[in-house]
Image (cartoon, rainbow, N blue to C red; front, side):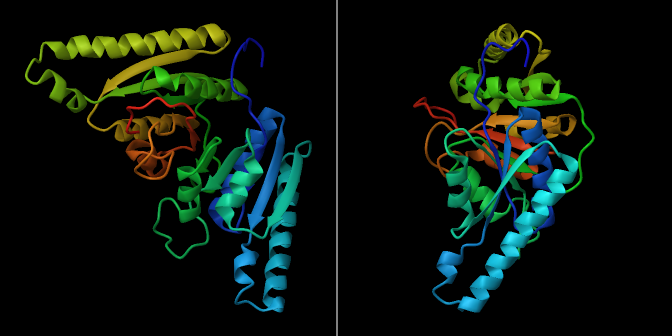
Length: 300
């Protein structure tokens, strides 16, 4: 990527398959992502046969294994038709899906899951595997909704809370560069979140808004310096729900990149209220970037 002087290491793309339509959509997205990166696509099917061995017959387990390997072979063949030059590997795991995905991702891999699997609760917007994988993620994880390719908008959207999101925004910049797209930084300022501090001093609201805008502008400036070939837009919006504003904005994006929660609690080590809501309601694929620092103070 010409002009890029900094950015995260984009490693292997790992996608989980279980035979469901959402998983097939995730495979198509993951294959395109791996092709853009020039990296490997690793297709994983976790059958959890180790736990089934306690109560299932040998014949049943062998049928499960055979079906899993056939699914992997068929999926790899379908990917090869679309991306003949892409390096594809497959893995049949005897363990459960979530630890298998994290183990395959290692230190730098990106996990990709569909928004739902083969579970019985078809009304769920995000299946249990995707939710558990996201909540415990230590490497980037993408949740892909739907089965049909979306019409490209030429824009990558990054949700920005504060200066601690710089690494997340760098990741978004790399993704925008791979797609030859523009990058939009969007900070949502929740006025109600400041009411307790300013009480009735409404004259301070615009001053506080200005400080938010200054921090966002400074971050955009850093990204423009590091990624000089990238078109970067920086927008600040006021709203009562950061998740709602970002979900609506995601309708005009090819990818929404958000940082994980900084402090433990709520849903696992990575998910907060905002990120959890976006994984359910965003209109485009969501790429969650876990945090590894000790900075506190964000509930997202």
